[in-house]
Length: 468
Ligand code: BG6
Figure: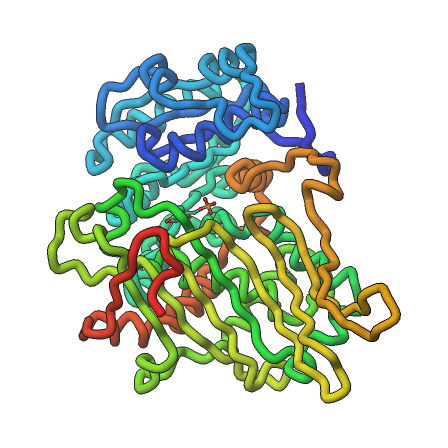
């Protein structure tokens, strides 16, 4: 069988090697997504999932631990898909720092291909703590796992989760380490927010509806806010979150990527290369927050109880961050773009809010909101006349909603999309090394300022709107 995805593209057989298969990310997102892809018949039936673990977890042990039927639109589990997935999974025990274990892994991958009589794309998914990336990447290259079975480098791919570095310096060092063994084409820097349907729709909305593109500049737009509010806290992931904080976890990655889609110029062609170069061009124009203005341009907070959760009574890690940036271009000069993200807030809501300028003859403010999650859709505030004899006005909402307008037809979740695109080698929704570096440059002065003082860290109640 050669399955095709929703775009009629054939997915070739692949060896999906997951480093850290028993970890939180794999269990919460990757394995359920792979199950859905198998259930939907999207993965080639010769595709094999190879789980790398330090421990002795067996395939059965892995499947006992993980809930694969979560996020089911129809809430029905498919035993045949579960069995197919189990049959296509193998576990490999390895010490990530031991070169011999990489030799053994290479042999296992070669043997698998030989048994099947087919050359497969090899995907190495780093679902491990970012502190471990460098050594794994180095050993993958040193022990020859960076080539495919036909010794074409392009047939092996490296999937790297965020955070990609902890600041500009470490991100550049990681880029350099990767470049020693992998070409840029082989590298997929994951930002799963780019793979959310609603984020992709930003480009379609902007470039397929000329009425909006004509208004898309400082002439008509007064401000933009991109916010990601979560109700959940850090959910026990102290080791992951404590060195990060909201600025690194969300703003440097997800929110600046979204900013790119919202503010970039229209590419001449809507393909990966042109989209990336338009996004990169605008990210380069975003001014780094000036060192002397960090105080007035930013806000940071920590939810009460966080210090206990991470067992660090002096932690200054922010669980809430907001920064205002400006774009140094004729199109966007003077328009503040506010980026905001927080955990343990009163609501779960990610949205982009574009506020249009009030006109002297107008009767209200037009605001356009991209609802990224939940209740995905796009809405526009319009002033209307209330029915009746008086000239009474009311703001009403013109609403496009995925649930209503697409007949509640389920769409692939972000990690399904990430995996499909990596298997088919499509880079459109992954971050380039230049984009990553531009994003670090923008937030670097804030990171440095915040590292040196903490008196402005505000504490907020979990379940509240965050610090004021
Ligand atoms: C991750 C962050 O990138 O995104 C987490 O590291 C966050 O802190 C998660 O909770 C949220 O993703 P989603 O898709 O559930 O909004």
